[in-house]
Image (cartoon, rainbow, N blue to C red; front, top):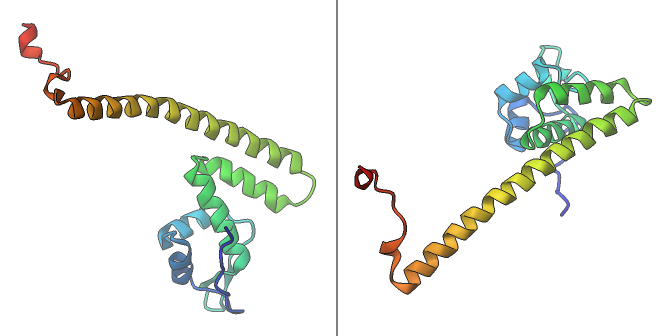
Length: 146
């Protein structure tokens, strides 16, 4: 599904406008800039106020998606450094992303395994409730053990 992007004025967007459009807080946008996650410096007005353009919003989306998959800030910073450096390091970028992909895939597989027990427990409870003997489901009673 393609996202319909609202056009950005030539003068750019304020940090508040970017926060509203991206769902990323103003504090987080400033933090991303402070820790070096930008691929190019955010434009500034003569008064020093940030002005964001489409490239900035696209990069913010990349950063937030990488963070949402659990990529550490340090790794995103390294990726940003590689992108900023320009051509010639594509193999390193690819290796970084492939490594992260493998980590995410492993976490997803672990979650799927864990979800199987939840699914099993749901089936047990539904079955026992339907059969009318849910009161016989195991409930530990530590006092009875003494």
